[in-house]
Image 1 (cartoon, rainbow, N blue to C red):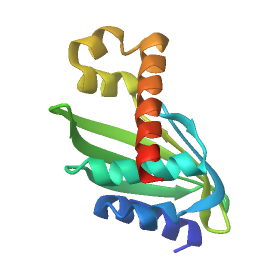
Image 2: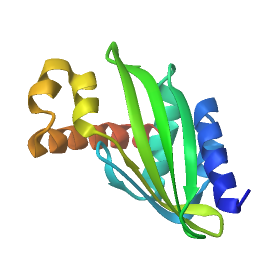
Image 3: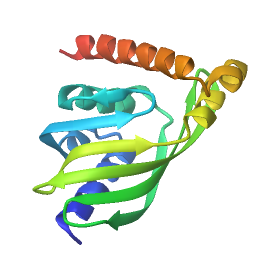
Length: 155
């Protein structure tokens, strides 16, 4: 197993155990993270997001498969998550894109179908408006605000 594969395994095993400290250690010093809900995050905010995920979503279940190393710097894998949000059951299929340096993640992007996620999370509102840029920006703004509030409580 290569160092990058090992980091991916460590990352997702830590997520499944909700061990945010080990998960955060998988990132390099100046790492960035991006997904359709949160947008682009710096290292500090990424670490706070994973702490929030691990400590505030008690029914989170994850699995990962199909790790593919594209070269010594880039890798991808598929991962799924199940959890409840406001009494809605969420099932999300993600494709993770990683860039590594010295065996640590320096860029991480999770791609998923935002419209499907939005319908599950927001019901009829998500079904009607989840495909619009307006809705995505509104959700990003709300998610970022919640993350900033969480970050302020852990400092």
